[in-house]
Length: 235
Image 1 (cartoon, rainbow, N blue to C red):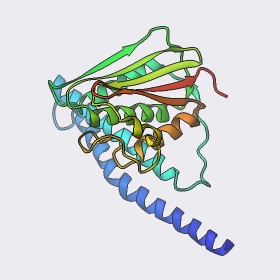
Image 2 (tube, rainbow, N blue to C red; image 1 turned 60 degrees about the vertical axis):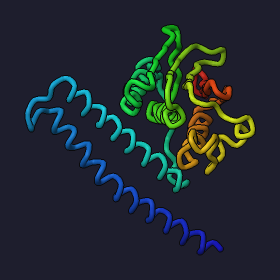
Image 3 (cartoon, rainbow, N blue to C red; image 1 turned 90 degrees about the vertical axis):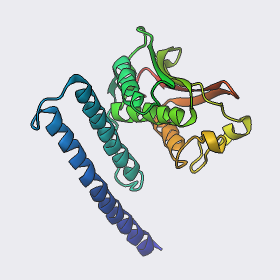
């Protein structure tokens, strides 16, 4: 049994290394060429073109980080150290809002960003917290055909409350208990949430990794709001 476990562990590590290489090579190429464009090597960009290329770069960086985060979950022995530091929550929320805005149907869904200036800075891993907001935002985009999506930050008695709100169709009450389970997809076929079924489960794990919690409020026909509560100080 021990030999089998060691063999399986080695296979898993080799598999992750191979997948990491195959995915990161094209991603590095994409990011490299965006830098070439932004530096004006092939000629100057106008303001609109620069914004578009910066959006591509932001999406590429996020995908690169997501690949690394997901693959790291496959190798438990490679524990990632906690990189907790005070986060400028307003800057983070606005950055994610700009990134998500490029994925919205133009003129159909409005992106809103509301940051209470008194919101404290939580101690968090900035990369993982950005991933939480992007996962929830992408989840909202998938469910919302028209109306709005809002990213909000405000003080909370336990620290900080981050909210991703949408005007989608809402989530049936019977789906809520399994909403954060792996490979579970809530909602109707037309408003499917969770993508592969890993997005919300991974989001919950990342929030709990920070010592926080995630809740959802929803009303059929009106929309949903996912609330992330984070402690102000690191545990």
